[in-house]
Image 1 (cartoon, rainbow, N blue to C red):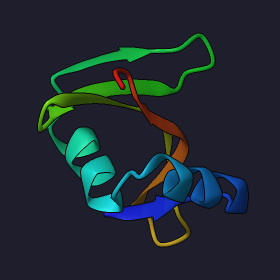
Image 2: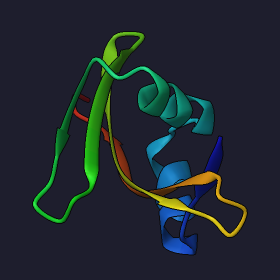
Image 3: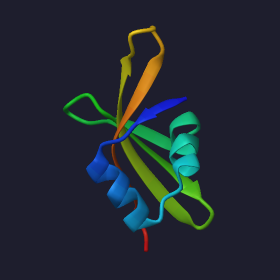
Amino acid sequence: MKLKFSVHFKFRLAERGIDIDYIKRVIQSPDQTSHSLEGQTVAIKAISSRKLKVVYARKLDRKGSIEYIIISAYYLDK
């Protein structure tokens, strides 16, 4: 699975203590999904005792593989 992150988001990821493997799990097998008005996918999954929300977009790369552009990820509960 190919993920793309902005530099800003990588900083936020570390700040929020989110493991990249968790983001992959949310995308691969979410508990619930919806779509934003901008066409982005919003996925939520329970990870341990917390719910992780990931907002992402999909596009094809030059080789025709799906690339996931992670826009945001954060825990819904503290």
